Every structure is written in C-alpha cells, then in structure tokens.
Amino acid sequence: MANWSAAEAWEIVLEQVCPLEARLLPLSEALGYHLAEEVRADRDLPPADRSSMDGYAVRRADLHGDPCILRLVGEVAAGSPRRPRVKPGACVRIFTGANVPPGADTVVMQEQTEEENGSVTVRLPAPEAANILRRAEDASKGTELLPRGARLDAMQVGVCAAVGKGRVRVHCRPETAILCTGSELRNAEDRVRPHEIRDSNGPALGAALHQWGFPGARHRRVADDPATLAAALRRALRGHDVVLISGGVSVGRYDYVREAVESAGATVRFHRVRMRPGRPSLYATAPRGRHIFGLPGNPLSVLTAFHEFALPAIRRLAGCPPEDCRPEWPLPLAGAAESDGSVRRCALARLACCEGRMAAALVPFRSSADLVSAGRADGVVLLAEGRTHFDAGEMVAFRAWRPLP
Image 1: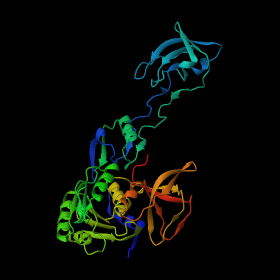
Image 2 (image 1 turned 135 degrees about the vertical axis):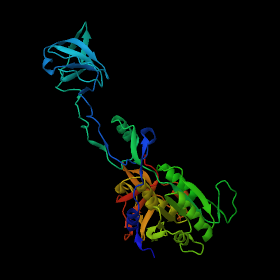
Image 3 (image 1 turned 180 degrees about the vertical axis):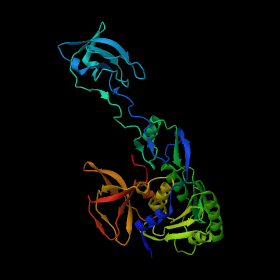
C-alpha cells in the first residue's frame, strides 16, 4: 500500500535537496541559470532626469501667450554630455533619452511645435514635468532588482546588463543520467518483434529535461538483471547529481530497482505514493549529495512522476526557490470529471478556450501506457484525493508538461 500522499512525498524530497554550488558566468552564457546572489542597482535608474520624447526642453512658466515663441539656444542628443542652460524665454532641442538640461522642467513634444529661424512656436501648453523621466524613478542606487534564486530569462539578463553585471554568480545546473530498464526495449530506429518495445521513456525524459532548461542528459538502456542494474546505477552516481530510472520500480518478479538502489548504498526515502498514474514512484538519496528517482515504466506514469517529483527537485538543485519548483495554475474545468477518490488523480488535460476564458479540458486515455493520448495534452489537472466528482467550471490545479505560451 502507498504510505505517502503526493504532497508528503514532495516534502520529503524538499528536505533532501538544496542548491548546488555557485559559479561565475559571463552574462552571455547565463541564460536559464538561477542567481546565487541578488542583483542591485549600481546607480540611480535613470541616473538623471531624462526626456521620454523628441521635442524641446522648456521652463513651464514660459508657456504662456498665444502664440508662445521661445528662443532656441542649443541641442542635447541622447548620450551627449552637453548641458546648455535654459533661461527665461529660451528652449533647447532635446531627443529621447537625453539628459534634461539645467533650468528646464518640462519637455514639449516636437509634434506640438514649429521651429523656424532660431525660434520655436509652442502651439499647445504642457503640464509641468511633462515627458520627463525623473532621476531614480525606476530604482534608487542599491535597490534590489533581482532576488537570489531568480531565473535569468531575457528580461532579467537585460536588467543585469543595465547595472553593469557583465559576470553573474549563478548556481550550477545538476547533471542528470537516465537509465531505462527492460530487456524488451529497443532503439527507436530498430525493427521490433511482437514481444519487443521501442524505448520511448528515455527520449521523452531527455526531451522534457531539455525543454525545461536542462539539456545534455545521458540516456542508456539496462537489461532486467539485478547485478547489471546495480552496476549501471553505481556508474551513473559517480558522475551525475540525479539519476532517473524508468521501469522496474513496482513489485513484480523482474522489478529490481529498489534492490539495486539499496545495494548501491542509497537510502530509500519513499516508495509508492497515493497518486495515479505513478503510484510505484521511488525516491532515494545516495552519498555525496546524489538523488535517485525510480519512475514507473508506463509512459504516462513516467511523465507524471517526473513532473511531480524529479523535475521540481532538479529545479531546486539548480537554485530555484522552493515555492517556485513545482508550479501549478488554477484553471476551471471545461467539463465534469470523475475520480475514485482513493488517490490523487493526475488527469491528462489540454488548454482550451471556454466561454471566453482559459480552461482545462480533459484528454481521455485508456491506460498509463497510452502515450498517444499524452501527445494531445498540455499537462495534467490534479484531482484531489478523497473526492469522486468535480463539476464543470470548478477550479482545479493544472500542472504543465510543456512550457506555456
């Protein structure tokens, strides 16, 4: 019998995993990594009052009369150190991003003016401070802009560049190995006989890791032999932070994963979880901070256990904050759903537009071996243990199996 709920199993994993050591990377190589330090503003942002428009820097007090005519006394382009003073009755030509010259307190848009023979006619008045980005309006010097643990996507990389972080301290990404057990397994390109199966779990797990930002996982097949599996596991543990094992984790005659895990000196933290698919899932820790996830052999069970436990643990090792490692989104059900209530059901679902809002539509599947149906899904909805009926429109948790658009 499964002794742990899915939530309890995750808490067990979370107690054992902590971020890997940090390293300095050039900003150009840091995309997708998690920060091992906070990033702070190295100066006020913006560092001076700046124009947000092409136009003319003026004194608001001079904008009177019909027409209002001002003397043009200079020009300031973005990046220019020039600081021509704006005296009463004068104005300075200014461009977007340029520092506002001393004496000016307003920028009049170019479209509201006419320039001729060194004079500028202002056709429409402007409020004081119009079209000016104030110094430190975005952030003051020393303000934390990105917290420790933030994942560096394109915008975060831009923030780092803006505050002079050409190199950033980030957590290392975990190295992951994939072992697929089963004497019946063959390569995707192999011709197979009726009693043989093409290995889909290995490629699927490797692709899932890659799409979530962890490329380069090594994958190999292992025959159903306890000594062979134990030897393969020991080798994998020597060079990898995480080992994923698919198949051989249940209680059948040829299920040797727990035996191999224990013979490798690892400690089993949980085995069998109250969720479906994925009930036989196993988690163990090995010396030197290694982690082992025993995933069931059927494809839907593999992907469920991977997204529920293994991927969140890998994210945590990479420096992701605990609260962000296992994201889920509340979505309404597009239709009613049923469950037997004995375990938490992870039901295949796709994103759909329902009455003008995003909803989760269940994808029927025949069994946990139904990989074809999984190919039509965007993830799963988590139907709580202890309940048997869920109404259409009811809010449920959605777990994405691919990056959301």
